[in-house]
Length: 571
Image 1 (cartoon, helix red, strand yellow):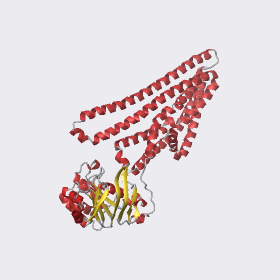
Image 2 (cartoon, rainbow, N blue to C red):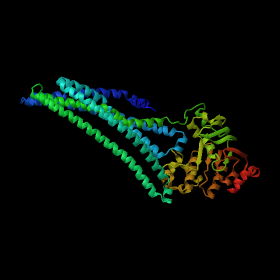
Image 3 (cartoon, rainbow, N blue to C red):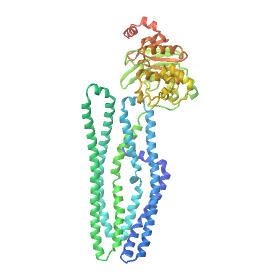
Image 4 (cartoon, rainbow, N blue to C red):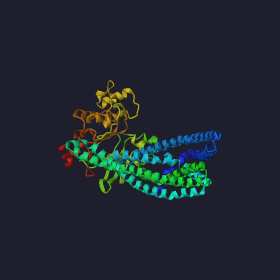
């Protein structure tokens, strides 16, 4: 995304606030106009008050100055309140858009992305983009009006001194351009090093067990120090660049004041200019020089914003799931029975073919197991059914309708899934099971018993926190919670994806009991390595290297398929 497109997108952020911005502009214009009279009152106080020993004039114009300052500052406070509200709403909007987009991204993105980097990037980018609502940048109109008014004031007092101030402008421009280019390069480098560090940090925390087992703490500490030194070094250069920029600006301003003092003193001594006019002129000079710095520093300021805005809007352009409702009404989706048909389904990651020409039918209320060696494509079959991926070719139908024609959210809500890699939220066991539903108390207790979570069925122990992703739970407890979650949201189609891998023998037997009782009238698909459960299903689908090898009853396959028989015997 080029800078022009990025700037257009930044400008579009302000469109909902057009009315408030117009009010702010009017108030700022009036405040600037009020401030322009202050140097004139100062001239009156000095020339007609101090020099002529006229206390009445001093008091009168001092009160006028005070009144002007109160009026001007009141308007500025009103503007600041409006600006702050706009800032908060834009920041909230940016974060909301990022979160909503994140929740709709294709699942492949999360398999490739580092979540620590993702969160770090979003926070940094939003913070930088919202700097466009910074008071210095947002009140650019004030700076322009101040500059124009200041020039008028300078010309009224003396045109020769005005030329001296105008000659100061090219030096300011050269200084601002030089430092803004330097800062832009440093900002790009800092953003990249921050992203690299976040990626490294997430990777390190994720592999903390291996780091300890293989004695890598010293190595990782060295890597940490190097990463930090790189970031801190860039930050130091940025801070020093600010110091140099301010120092050069101060030196140039002081040089201007030296010139004004010398030339002004000469004119006062020659009686061509009053002392009050010199003071007023210096005040007007600040009205001109300060805005020049702000206006010329826009590029310097935008060097912070543009790289982050470019990355943020590129993130929003990433491909998302199609969540729009298509042909199937919501009422019909909710009546889904669970008749599934894979027809000539092929699927590939990039160039690698994962599933090839898959054809089979699962009837409503049928219990079907999918087996195969690791990497054969079993879980991919389920991910296609859950619409986490789209087939490269072929169709998957539910109750005779292509699953792509269902609204994706309504469709998924008709499926209960128990996964080996279940994610548990950092809340109570009860909340992890309910997931915002409100089941009856008796129903909740029955589910806890059916999932063999009897230790949580009585008393208040179900209110215990599970920790981040269930860190406080054992592998078996995690899968039992996943089972309870599926049972409480009981749908017509149940999918068990390696859901018994961490269960003990007694629990596995109980799962078989569930299949024959509570789930008797449900369509059930089991992806499993546990061969014992195959005797309790209607049919077994055997996947080999991404292809449908066999499909049939357990006894039939055991007799006729050496591949299946060897797999069973090995297990």
